[in-house]
Structure formats: C-alpha cells, structure tokens
Image 1 (cartoon, rainbow, N blue to C red):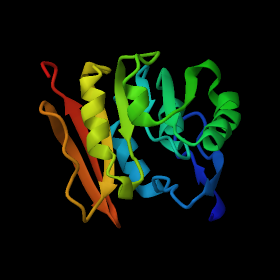
Image 2: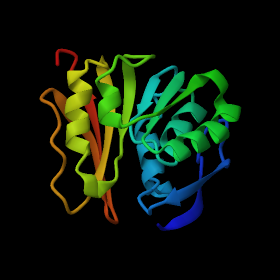
Image 3: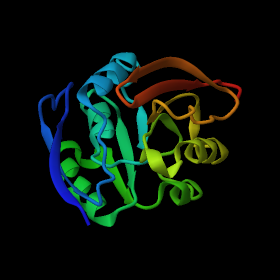
Length: 192
C-alpha cells in the first residue's frame, strides 16, 4: 500500500496560511489545488457567512476548513476512512471547536440517515474521480431532502470525463476547467 504525506494550506479567512497535514494511504487523496480553491471561494465570497456546510468526501478537509475560516456557521465532514477521519478531528477540532462535526462513514450510506445539522446551504462533492460517485452522491443528496431551497452545490470531476449528471432543478451558475479538473457550482432551484 502506498503511503505518502503532504499538506494543504487554508488560503483565506481567519486561519489564512494555516497548513493542514495529511497522510494518504492508498494514493486516493487528491486535495483541491490552491488555484481551483481560490476560484471556488471567489465564487462563494458573498455566500458563506453563517452557512451550514456539508463536505461529503472530506479527504484532507481543506474545503470545509476554508469555508469555516471564511465565516460559515458550521460544517459536517464525511470521510469513509476511519484513520483519515480521526486525523481530521485531531487537526480541525482545535481550530473550529463545536463548529465542525466529523463523521467516519461512507458518504452514500450516510446520506440515507437523517444527518444532524441538516438542511445544508452549501455542499462540496469532490469524490475520487475513478469511483464514479459524483452523480450518485448528487442524486442521493437531493433524494434525502437535505438541501435548503436555494442551496449551492460544488461538484468537482475529471475534466475529460462527461460531467456528472445532476438532479433536475440544479442550475450550473459557474464552471471552470484547469489541468485535469472540471469545477461546477450549482444552485438548487427553490421549487426543486
């Protein structure tokens, strides 16, 4: 099994410049790069204050940490690997205290339960590209009725693959490609 260590940096807000360390066992961790994250949070800059955030495939935790650093009310991070979830808790609880909740669970299974802190205003869906989880996660998220009427949903996928299918009523309001990444920001229609 491949084991590598790395770090990502929070690029804005109260914890700007703070590095988050991670260990990647198995080589499936791919944190969103600084450039794409900067683009994403420029898109979201007026949408974060007091928002309830869900990060379904937390990985390094940097997307939720960035949102909290910039004023989100609280965030739920769902991470399948228990060791990684424990590492997220160890690093992020001291920074964000009771504003952060970390769940060691499979994202699709977790969505079938009634999660705490629902409904969510902002959701990050950035799963490992090769597993084909983005479209099922979008469908499960909508089906579980965990979104506020005008929620924002960020979906990251591989640029050269077809864009993941999303539920009817989600409107793509921003899109960018860079390197191997396609970033799409959707707004859920209030009558969806």
